[in-house]
Structures are given as C-alpha cells and as structure tokens.
Length: 369
Image (cartoon, rainbow, N blue to C red; front, side, top):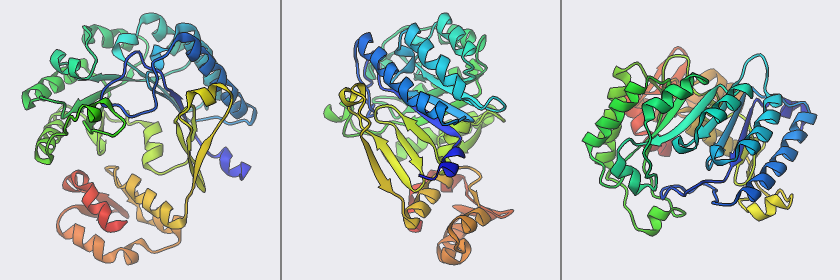
C-alpha cells in the first residue's frame, strides 16, 4: 500500500461486538459473552491500535461502536480508551462512543471525559415501555435524569430513534418525538425498522410496515424535528447547527477510513474490506479480511450512493476532478428528468436532492447506477 496515501486517512472505527442482550432487529456482529472473552478481545484490539500508533497515524474522528461498548467492564474500557486517545489529532477531533442507557453510570462518564471522548450516541430507540419489551429492552430508566447526568460530562449527545416497530402507532411516535425534544440534545439518528435475514425478528417472521406507513412516520419525524431547531443533513440524521456527525460524514462523503475489530469494515483505496466476524479467530490473533478491489465504475457508484444522501449533495467540480469525466454531460438526461420532477436541484455548482428526492433516493440511484 502507498504509505503517503494512508497517512491522509483521518477516521478510525473500532468495533466492540459484545452485548448484554440481543436486540431482535439487529444483524450486526455481536456476542453475549463472559468478561474473560471481552478482556482478551481488548488485548487484541490494543495490538492493532499500537500498530497504528507506531506508524504515526492520528485521527480527526474516532468512533467506538458495536454491539454495546459500554457493556465492557470499567477496567477494560479504561485500557481501551486510555490508549485510543493517543491516536487523536489533538488540534481538532471528534471522539464518539456508543452506549445503551442501562450501561451508563457516572464512573464511566468520568472516564470518558478523562479520555477525551466528546460525543456520545445513546440507543434509546423508543420511550414506550410496551414497545421496548418487543425489542428486548425492557428496563425502567428515568431518561431525563440520565441525559442530565451525561450532560455534566459530554455536551454533544446523539440519541437513536426507531420507527415502524411492531404495533407502533403514530401517536406512539409523536410521544417519542416530544420526549426527544424535551431532552434538549444536539443530534438525532432515526431508523426505520428493517427485517434482516440474520435477525431474530426475521426468524419470528415479523413484517416491516408498509411503504405508505413508513413514509407517514418519516414525514412526522422530519416536520417535528425541523420545527424544533434540527436540520436534516443526511437522509436519516438530524442535528442542531454545528453538531453534525463528523465521523459518519466520512462515510457519506465516500472518504477512506480504518475499521478495527470483528466484523468491522474499512476503506483504503483501492480496496474496501471487511474483517472476519469470527471471535475465536480474532482472539487467536488471526486477522482474516475479505477485500473488494474498487474499480473506477465501483468508485463512481459508491460516490453517488453516499454523497446524494447528504442534504448538500456534492460539488460537480469535485466529481469531475476525481473521476476525470464530465458529470453533467454523462448524466445529462437523467439529471434533466429528476430536475423536472423536483427530485434533484443544481445550485452554486452543487447537485443535491430536494426533500422529495431524499425520500425517494433509491428511485434516483437506480437510474444513475
């Protein structure tokens, strides 16, 4: 690999595949396991992180996701975070950790702050107790006290919201949105429930809501969050001004990043890769990786799929320079079609989706790729 090229990579993802319980909709790499396996996993992660450190990599964004990173013991979290913070670009960084509400406490929050974590993503999903039971998250938590505690240590807070859950009504979603507004946070990530083949819901033959119902839920989310100071900057993500996720924007701009840990993906041109999901192999020090060579045609597809998810789309000049082709000429007929039906816009040298275009993005992408 070209060392000079790699040095420019500014984002790192670290996967923690452990959970205290398995959500029935989840198809990510995850395990319920004993602390001894978690500790061995951190041992192996630290080996990978030390290699990056020795090669002088420093990152503007680091994201620790899962699974549930906060299900690690305090000691294992401290070992991981104390070293990971050394990989931060000191001048300008975003350091995020994912957390479930039931695994957050003040001692961990103090540790996060001392290790320079400045953003936290909390998987609330819904405030409705009946709906929480359906997703195996049956716990009683005072969310307002929890968020106020988190704010003592971290100001940049995201919460996850799922819609389209079994038997969820529009009134349920309205109540969830009201509670999110009351939390007075900076960022909201929304997800329509999708039933994937590796999930418990799939085995139980749970069905997704209809397209019309999903659109109704989405429109309600968009309207409510906009009215309360959130900007939709990506199809499913809303932020107060200045609090857009820098790390996730790396993905949406189709930029390179490292992925460490079981099942983690990464992109180092000209390869996209995915690490093996085998915990046994990883704990034995094996780093089995599936690689995909990215052709120019693949690269164009990835670029369009990712960048058109963003509210601001992309600069046409950037596309032309990156791929050495004339975007407006190559896609002239398709662009004209979607401008006429109010799904695409061109302004100030940028091409981007309208509100309707973002909602029907799959339709647009099918035409372009």
